[in-house]
Amino acid sequence: MGMTATLAGCGSSDGSSEVTLKLVAADYGDSSANSSQKYWDKLVKEYEADHPGVKVEVSVYSWTDVDRKVKEMVAAGHAPDMAQIGAYADYAAKGQLYKVDDLLSIPVEANFVPQLTDASQTQYGMPFASSTRLLFYNKTLFSEAGLTPPQSWSELAADAKVLKAKGVKFPYALPLGPEEAQAETMQWLLSGGGGYTDDVGAYAIDSAENIKTFTWLRDELVGKGLTGPVAPAKLNRADAFEAFARGEVGMLSGHPTLMQMAAKKGVKFGMVPMPGIDGRTKATMGVADWMMAFKKNGHGKQVGDFLDFVYNDKNVLAFSHEYDLLPVTSSASDTMAGDQDDQDLAPFLDELPSAELYPVGKTSWAKISADIKEQIAKAVSSGGSPTGVLGSLQNEGIMADSAG
Image 1 (cartoon, rainbow, N blue to C red):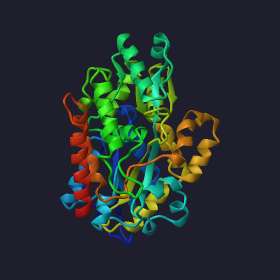
Image 2 (cartoon, rainbow, N blue to C red; image 1 turned 90 degrees about the vertical axis):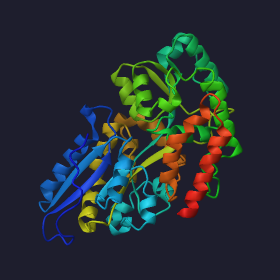
Image 3 (cartoon, one colour; image 1 turned 60 degrees about the vertical axis):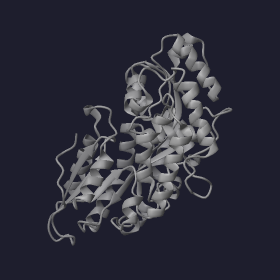
């Protein structure tokens, strides 16, 4: 999907000759027409016009592939200068990343939304994009079935049962496939009163609350055929979103990008807070993706200058508007909050200050996130054991923390 990757930067680190910076980035588009490659190409063209001694080459990969691509490049000794992916703490723990305050100017570093930088708990990752989650529902399907949006799990299951009887293909879409299973999982854990970690930051994946949550999902949704014809293990988030935009999904957990997708296809939708076990959920999930800079090629000065440009309000807002995501800087967030044209994002923006994020500050998170993607769907399969699967993930988390 992206341009051919150059495996290493060239030129000197003191700026005395031309430098080529390599950036690997994730794709936030849903088609070639709005691939993130186009966003980066435009941004890079503007930057290079004012910086004749610097070239920036961007390779964009799908979220299914991008973390693995970066891991492989680093392992082969060809780390990119920058990577915009889902986690960074494991690279930071190995001493492979620049500190943020060695890269960014003080005004840019101080401008990040506090909730996002507080969540990182380290000095090596810069938030790049953020979002929160709400329950999306198809207004047409709900109206035809005489339903109202659910506020509790029991209401969600009851609505899904009616939708199934009406012939809706996916009453509730449950994407636990390898693309983003860790997100769907976290949202359900939070709505059940649990989460990935406890109050002191230790893994609590196999807590009683979490086991109860996945037992309910297995027995009351998946086991009763209320999640559609595609097994959760085979359903990716992107596919679930596309199905919603085709009018085939009654309900699913979604982030702001889904608004644009559904509207383009003429699907009438509503959004409400995610239902909780006994009523409206007390915690919602926030997600931040991260930018990091590798020390391998010694281009810290040029990387820092480029990232200052990346994080100016014009570029932050352009990216947020293109993909219906939330700005990661306070000034851009304030601009969005005051813009009438952005009021559709207001419900998501309002939830960000109190949202809970992945434990990205843990060096083990990248591995545990990958393990969740691979294993969690087994907990809701026929005959699956939530206790066994969550217990296995908990043990892996403890061992990964010890190794880290």
